Length: 314
Image 1: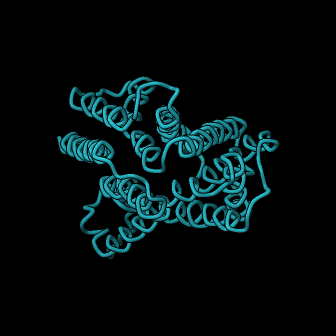
Image 2: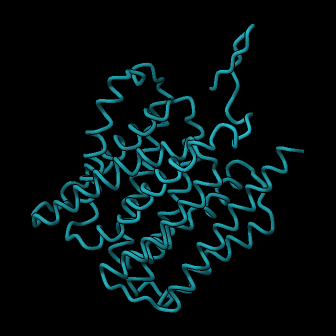
């Protein structure tokens, strides 16, 4: 809430009712830089996961353990988790379960395919969100949006070497698409748990995801080289705690259209780092697939933003 006062009384005004150019102009460059740094750290995830010899279970436990260690003292200090109802705890449990499934399948996708192709598959979460919102929330999907959905899936087909599950890359794409579906479900679950503060939801997401990973401990492998532990630390600290903290800060204060545009830099950055660091082949089909998914996703974000502003001004 923003406070405005005159000589007689104090006003409380919701930020969304104020012209964004008046309230965010000075802060916007700093927030944009914050979001860019967050996405830069996030885009390092596929390359770090592909290059480490640690398996997907080990990576998941390490990243989540670091996140829980950082966020738990803050959540405990605030103490709001003490007032959560049984229903709210169940909501956090479900969020953690879906998040754990998303991470596990995404890590498997990266290991099976390449960092860029796995990142391509996960970037379809935006159009998959439309499908889920249509099914569970009854939100209308326009013909233009259905076309965008088809184009994004076509981009994944273009980069597939062959349409058989005997090929690891194709298998990685399929698993990556499922991971994107789980990722697309998270905003819907967070919306239903809006009565819980952002910090408590963040802590619950990491905490319960870690609990779902722990039964897989026997599949983890900690006989690693020192370089692998450095990579796990980077994944946990830079790519999870710091990146997530910066992104939450930026995404809660920047207009949604800004965060959408910035987030879609994830795929080009992941592709560039994979090509430069891991010598991933940059083929024409891969360039076309990436351009199609990113281009359509950005166009879709602009289309939905314009449609929402037209509805809001009607």
